[in-house]
Length: 298
Image 1 (spheres, rainbow, N blue to C red):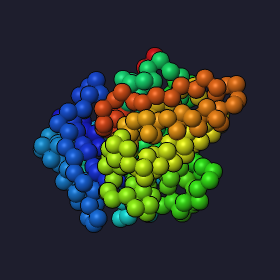
Image 2 (image 1 turned 120 degrees about the horizontal axis):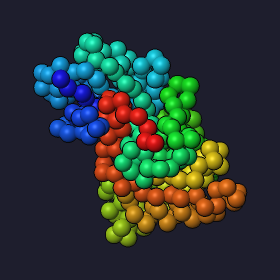
Image 3 (image 1 turned 180 degrees about the horizontal axis):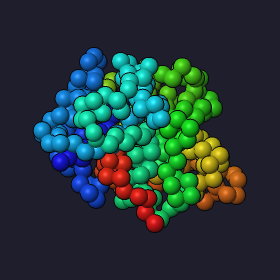
Image 4 (image 1 turned 45 degrees about the vertical axis):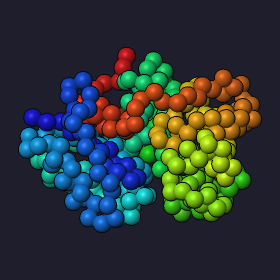
């Protein structure tokens, strides 16, 4: 008997085995291909299951999603962008298995609530800042899903000052300005030679002026978005994970400055914003908690 967790990311799939406590092991990862996406995902799940009877699968997917419809529509996976029936596909692959599905930000909030910075916190925003930007909400101690499962998807809050086209079709979304992918793209347009957010962070740490300008731009936009979200949601804690979030002071100093500049309301002046202590793969941890059917901590 096997319980599986699946993380559908912007650039990779990850899957692993889940035990009764929600711990995930035997994790395997593969890049998201440009074509035959489901076939690659399907093969990954079969390899992780290793022929065992699968009783439950937890799925965390980059957004947007339609949780009631079982549809994943990640903006950065073109073949699935108009919607892929992931719950039905996995149900067909593993007949009889319970399939539980959520946006990646909700999985991140679950992971932080069970084993990270949100233990004991009742109202909070959990964010991932990586190739894209997403988030999930804790409201009165429970992860909120919203009408379609997209509650907390902070990547599409519009930030002032940048009318950058976003993959969603809008302009000025914080994901279009401040994600690792978007920041690297902007830096290349300014003459920086590099490929991705990780390289950009290393260049900024080494003092490259374009890289530092890119991270200042990203940090400022993140601070604006966080402050707006905190004022709307009345949260007192924000925890940020994801690879690009680990870019250090070149990103965090302008983010903190923007929060201090904009957090004028008395109920968000003491907003706590911190880096996640969970290792890379928190979405998969949250998907594992979904798969195990664990209740929210008391």
